[in-house]
Amino acid sequence: MTDKLIIFDTTLRDGEQSPGASMTRDEKLRIARQLERLKVDVIEAGFAASSNGDFEAVKAIADVIKDSTVCSLARANDRDIARAAEALKGARSSRIHTFIATSALHMEKKLRMTPDQVFEQARLAVRFARNLTGDVEFSPEDGYRSDVDFLCRVLEAVIAEGATTINVPDTVGYAVPELYGNFIRHLRERVPNSDKAIWSVHCHNDLGMAVANSLAGVKIGGARQIECTINGLGERAGNCSLEEVVMALRTRRDYFGLTLGIETSQIVPASRLVSQTTGFVVQPNKAVVGANAFAHASGIHQDGVLKARDTYEIMRAEDVGWSANKIVLGKLSGRNAFRQRLQELGIEMASESEVNAAFARFKDLADRKSDIFDEDILALVMDESVTADQEHFRLVALSQRSETGERPQASVTFAAGNVEHQAQSDGNGPVDASLKAIESKVQSGAEMLLYSVNAITSGSTESQGEVTVRLQHGGRVVNGVGADPDIVVASAKAYLAALNKLHSKLERVAAQG
Ligand code: KIV
Ligand code: ZN
Image (cartoon, rainbow, N blue to C red; front, side):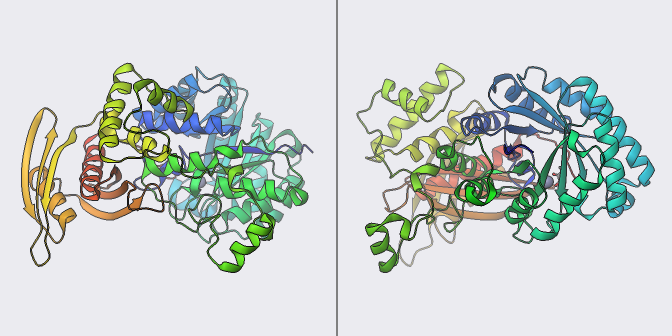
């Protein structure tokens, strides 16, 4: 059996199913480019048949990514599969990932299909997909809770139809490591043609065991593909986290004995990009990518690390892409230096006018903040007002007054399309007053589910504040992110960014729907 392990990243598909994490085509493209730099083997770019927006995103990614296989999810029907194939047409290497639920619960209650109907549909879907491409993955959704005899029957049939990868999802995060590992091994031993396919694990994190289960699927079960997401992004408690599983396999190569193609120094940049794009903040004590992952606070630890690093460190921070905050640019930096830094950060702007808009924002920021770090530049290009994404609402100006013992007041000027509005309000604090002022004009009626502030670069109040606002309206949940040295301004930007997402009519079908 090969010792090469395939890393299949599904941040842009399963990760995106997390409420509020939906991304625009350009945001997905930016993340796909970073995943390519990270050298993931497969990028699941989306679910092409779910919406026109997702189709366009899969297509755009397929057209530009050269070093990773680009994949689209498709339900087990001809329309979805044809749509996936169409979106993937421009890819150098492509995969269709088709799925249908196989657990009794899902078949009976959700699909309202008999096992024989599911069996037939799975078989025909793989046959149809194999006529369109040579690389077909099949997933029995809720596979881990499926009847094992029925599952073996389905898997044998889809391999016979030409499925090249068999993925076994623990869709609801119910598995425990030893049992999941044995389950994969049992399937591989029982399905007669199992050696004709690569076996894959796909674990959700509802009980906090997605990484452990995936590793057991590999070690005990003999799987050779892991499906995972950056920062463990995903519905509910998320998916198996790429950074954790990759670093476990690399750090404990002595135990797992597997080869990975991942460029680990790109892990932290990928984590930051996904967090800044989606507004899903990384907890400080998160393994590998959390701000504290390599920080030693206790005197005993600091002393030990200074004497010999490996007393308390099993990985090197620089190996996963942590670098000390570097001052990269300042007020006097010119357009060429800015453009070069964008290139070094792997940021490609679609047009010269986007570079100009970003440079103008950079100058504006450099006037107010003496040192500009990589994180500031990333936040700046993430700002919707310098990207080509259709933004309807845009902040023009904001002033606010707060004083001990007085109720804060805010006055906000913002554009909605071509019309400029001015609004005033008071509030419990200056942020509350500013957002109420905006809402008094927009009247979105959206409910705020989350408001959070983080320092973009740690360690100092000179940092820009990065604000995430999560809004819910009409069954949709969206996140808006805004950054500025002034957190009231950052909050107004985040609120308008979230309103922009609500404003863009993005319909999609949930994969597990
Ligand atoms: O969790 C799951 O079952 C999935 C499938 C669509 C692969 O994401
Ligand atoms: Zn999933």
